[in-house]
Amino acid sequence: MPRIIGNPKKSFVTGNETAAWACLVAGADMMFGYPITPQNEIMHYWTRLAPKHGRGFLQTEDELSAGFTVCGSVQCGKKAFTATAGPGNVLMQEPFGMAEAMRLPLLAIIQQRGGPSSGTVVYSQQEVTLTTFGGNGEGMRIVYSTASHQEIYDYTIKGFNVAWKYRFPVFILGDGYQAKMREPLEMYDPEDRGIEMIKPYPLIGLEGKISAGREPQHLCNIYSLEEELYEVVMKVAAEYEALEDTIVEYDEKYCNDADIIIVSHGVVSRAADDAVKALRAQGIKAGYFRPITLRPYPRKQLRAAIAKSGAKKLLIAESAYGQLDRLTKQEIFGENVKIENLFKPGVGIIDYDIISKVKSVL
Amino acid sequence: MSFSINSTGRIIEAYIGEYASGKSEMAINRALDLKNQGRQVTLVDLDTVEPFYTLRTLKKVLEAMGMKVISFAREDSFGLGETGAMLNPKARWALMNEGDIIMDIGYGVQGAKTLNLVEGANESSELKILAVINGTRPMTDSKEKIREYLTELGRVDAIVLNTHLGDETTVEIIKMGNDLIQEVGCEMGIPIAYMAVNEDLHELVPAEKYAMQVKYIKRYMPGAMW
Image (cartoon, rainbow over all chains, first blue to last red; front, side, top):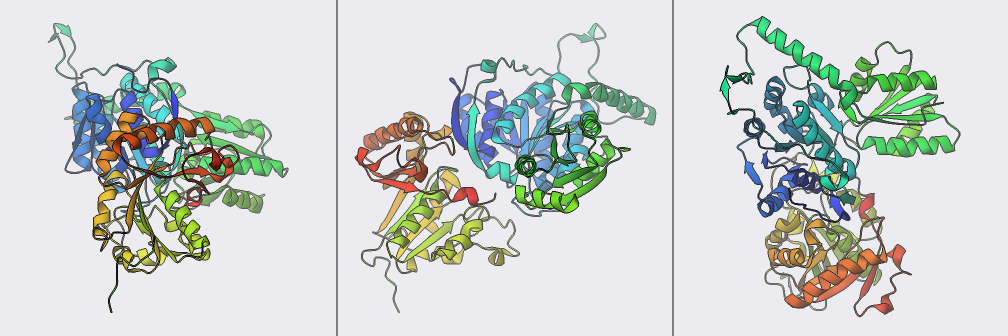
């Protein structure tokens, strides 16, 4: 693939713009999308960039179609992606479920907006439950929750490779603040960082004859009988669980001696990072734990952090009414630690909010 | 009663350009600059598509500084939701205000077209359309791209040089980007209105070294939480 960026350089960009460039350098062939704030500029930038680099774009009639056209496109061996938010993410759960059922290497960038329903166009972290466990399946998907433009860039590139290597749908979970915020980003061609991009490959119309040289490709999203489905779901679940240690990512700071560990994800973890530093400066032993993958969740790592710190409390801070909280509780069930929370659904959280909350519960 | 669009001696400027080029920052700084000269100024937030980002969160701060700001506030926005293109009536008639008018024309390259919606904009002889360009932006980081971009914007009366990299700005970065923009401006016959530099870099970028107007700006937008 020809280099696009050339010599790595820093640019002043928005998060949406970052996502479009990341898809371009990752070798994405095609975007299917339907407009919704706050992800619109991913489409805007993609449609400006794509023609210059021989890539494609189709605005479909709605999000259902956008999701399903990605499902179709990847089956034909095209590296395709979509981006959406809020109610668009709700509609796309059906095609996302198809990607889980058929093990399709779909990549979707989600820029969370307020909810329920159309909520606000601005910001929230209220699409955690939907993005991790949406649809009528078992959540067999990989979700990266980014916190900066650099991470949107890095994890989008990585996400395509993870999707095409393991064939689970991959989600880059951002939010409206990250989408619209501006900050410096170092862009690079993956090859220059020693990242080999996996070439997309067709899943249908394969060479050779079935029963004479190759097995049939059973890409099914419906089965006739309960037992057939049961076998498939159990097989997929086992494969997913076997991959967890390989996929899981997290960030942890100051947890060796923490009295309280602040658990947050995405853009809120930037506030948590500042808060922990400020609290430490005041002699309060606060720790920081951030799941980068929300699915699979770094449960072993969080349990280990609780154990080694001897922390008596966790503070779960999120711009939602308990979505990360529920996810975390189910993953660390049985730990003897009191869980406090700072829930600000649809509203930003700054370091001051976390510092005040920590002081009020210690 | 009759309103005159072309009353004498007032300044009307519209800041256009793509996302994150620095339109809002330039507009705020310019408006405050004029205000501090004792002039009557109205700052207009004209983003018809996504009016809830932009200046909204800074409205009260700017008003407290004595500025008249036309922008949606929380109390004006109830029930509007995502209603598609939305034109604040006060913004539509902004040119009928007395005194200087500084307009922040949001929503990227396409946004420049919305200036047509402002009553009197096409007839005004005072209106100056200023394109804000940052040479570290991926769409404007080479001469070819800057030329293409300026062509796409349509009418541009002057360019504002705004090359920076946020907190990581250096003198070299400023020079590298602004040189490119200036060369293209020269080739296309578009004058440079001024060069904007973060006030923190005042000493490293002294105005007397440049053959153009240098404006030292304060960054207000990082205070807008979105």
